[in-house]
Image (cartoon, rainbow, N blue to C red):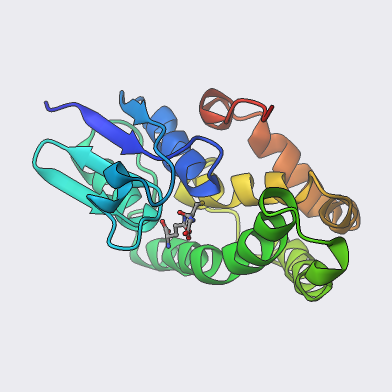
Amino acid sequence: MAELEIIGVPFSNFVWAVRACCAFKGVDYTLNPARPHSAEVLAIHPFGKIPAMRHGAVRLFETRAIIGYIDAVFPGPKLLPQEPVAMAKAEEWLSLINTTIDQVMMRQFIVPLVFAKAERHTVAPAVKALQAQVAWLEEALAGDFALPMGFSAVDADLVPILNYIKTQQEGADAIAAAPKVAAYLKRLLAHPAMVASAPPPRA
Ligand SMILES: N[C@@H](CCC(=O)N[C@@H](CS)C(=O)NCC(=O)O)C(=O)O
């Protein structure tokens, strides 16, 4: 089979998600640590976002599409449930994480604060939204969140984001106030697939 190439710097939460999925399935790949908007990324993603993927003649962007392709093409344990209702629930989660939770926690909180070195007060609205999302996750973890799989693409998608917010006081406080979320994060961060794919510590 052709070599699988995952394109994107490893500290991207979405690159981590895709790599965690590969690790879980036991899929070999080469990581090309290209930055967003680099020529390599723009050759695949029209707007230069990561991750991108190359596998023989197949070129893909969007985390959900990449994960779905990997799950369908490579052997190993399934990343998503196959039973229709459980599958739809997992899709619901992936969509929520990719469109709403990532927007608040990464794009409006972590990226400005950590990567763009914005002044703290400018992320105050995001902190409020983040607190509401963590509080909602706390309720959801008591309900139907637990997919009957132990590990799934949903975990791979969510854990890097929660791990990022925990690096900042406001995020750590929100998680500390949500014991189910805290326990979930601790348990999943110790999962071999998350450990094997974790980004190196930032200098
Ligand atoms: N919807 C995309 C989002 C990808 C995304 O936002 N990637 C970030 C890094 S984690 C990025 O490339 N940011 C640079 C930019 O938006 O210009 C996906 O699910 O893959």
